[in-house]
Image (cartoon, rainbow, N blue to C red; front, side, top):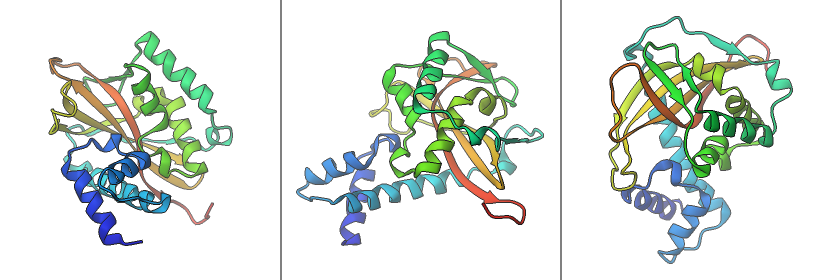
Length: 229
């Protein structure tokens, strides 16, 4: 594996301003093939993980000290729930219900609400996550649980940060991205979850404001206590 070539392909993809959530292993293979480079599965996964590492570092730079809203943060203990995680079919059914019923959830931050709207493609993006291809079996089980219990996850989230859409040519309907943080404990590990939401062009910023979920990402975990799982 020539890592220099792989990192150059990663650099070229980055310079093409492709939204990170549209980048997956298959996309990387096609992108490289168009440039007469044939990648193996391992090489494609290497590049994909470079993007994931980069995105995680960005997310972890969100400073809780500079968050606009200060609340008494709670960690949801989902140890018992994780004993019987939902199936993908159950998750799909639940997300479709949220979309069909246009359910809007309150967060812990005043005047901020999150809903789940969109077509089948958007629903699948939330259900499977932009990181699905890098998840192991346990990661997938946790993600399915996060989505199946979105209401509690969102209700326990706090507004963290926002940024303008810097690639309007790729997503002309998006004005801003807003990020919310929620925390979950399973057995002796604590997981930090970032809820990525979108604000569409033309939508009012008058409070209370509702933004639209498009990804649920687990960005880190830490072990608590003395026992290892």
